Image (tube, rainbow, N blue to C red; front, side, top):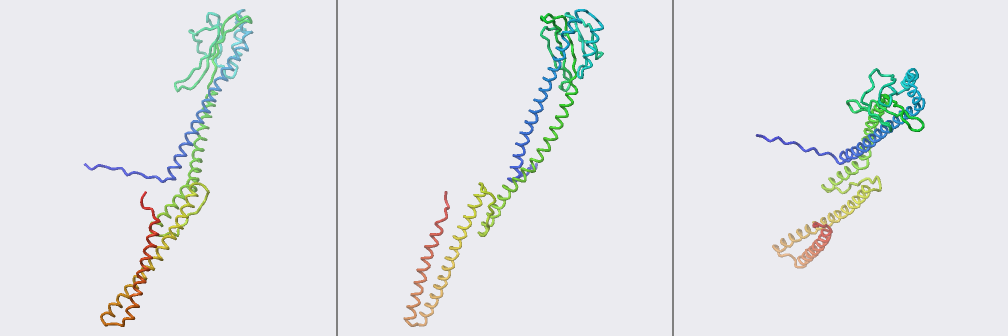
Length: 313
């Protein structure tokens, strides 16, 4: 069975840096946005609770006297005025044993198993999605000396604030997406101009060096690490150009002297066969010896230049 292989995708350095910085920016903005939302939600809940306790304390003294007199008209007047508050959905006055004296608001009955407490309590009610929908308050109705005469039950609607928080969350998400997109474009632009372009220019110059072209120069944009690298590369190119220029001149001189030795050697062989003049032969031998010394000297110079290359680490 033929094995199916997957081709490895190689992303450029600039793309990887852009994605890395973008992911970091996205993570930081996400954490910051979530933290702000949770903090604001808790602040709204605490403020909502403070408002509920404030309503309970505002009617405490009057409610105590009304519960004590058992005046049904006054009791109904108190709970009706309470449900006229912006967030109060249901209000009820209870006796010390939990019996409902008067209620207003929602038609749903007051829970019969309410836990009575002289210290009072509040409870957050959530829907099936876990969102806060209401807050229940049970506040003791007390006299000035702290005597408990009954209880005030309040069911306050948290939905308007929850909707506001939901809109705020949507606003945060929209701004989060917009900032991430803008951040991606800006990071990509910066990395392309200040990282990717210098690296690509260095790659092109290196390829030119591999074919023996030392004329390529890098543009020094900034005085950072890449700028200093470009400066060092340009200095290296100058040195290599000078070095290979010297090698080229020495090689030309060596070739010239080698040709001279070959020519004079041919003359000597021809003169030997035709019994030439001894003076002419001596002159040719001197030229051959001089050319040979030049080749030896050029060889030493070439060896000195080659010794400048470090081939082992």
